[in-house]
Length: 214
Image 1 (cartoon, rainbow, N blue to C red):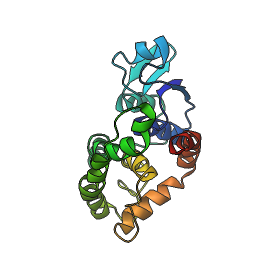
Image 2: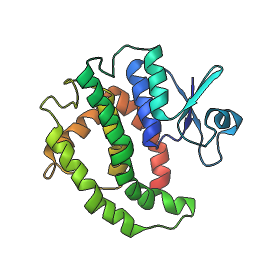
Image 3: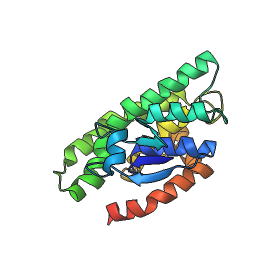
């Protein structure tokens, strides 16, 4: 299977982590902003990443891809079957995708990406996101995190993958997530980053991060 996208995208990372936890091998093909070629264009007619190509089948959007992979490879179960836990997991995926990601992206984009793309850098937008938009979300997670260190069913699920992926990007260029202010969240993110699957995916990002930080 080929996964088209950029590794530093939280949505691409979400699929890679989900696949890694299930032992699914995905070949990452760089795509976005005019890159990717005909296969990517067929899989994602509106240029949305990630996109997946599996033989003669293709689909885009991280949630759609995860639904496909989870149906093909149901074990280990990363989306709970029990109704309340399943709904809560989908909520956290939505929270990560549509609330945490939009709040954190001004920080990552303006501090690490914009200048490299020749785009205007809006430092004020990054600072505002860091000081006003992100803290209430971290406050919410601090309240919601159980003692087990996992968001749903006291085990690692799609909920944890979805929430941590945009926080990783944010933490690449911000130091506000501290143990003093958010001890549970800080420990939670640190523990998930130490998972074998997460460490392997982040190791693949290291070279790209060095180029951005240079």
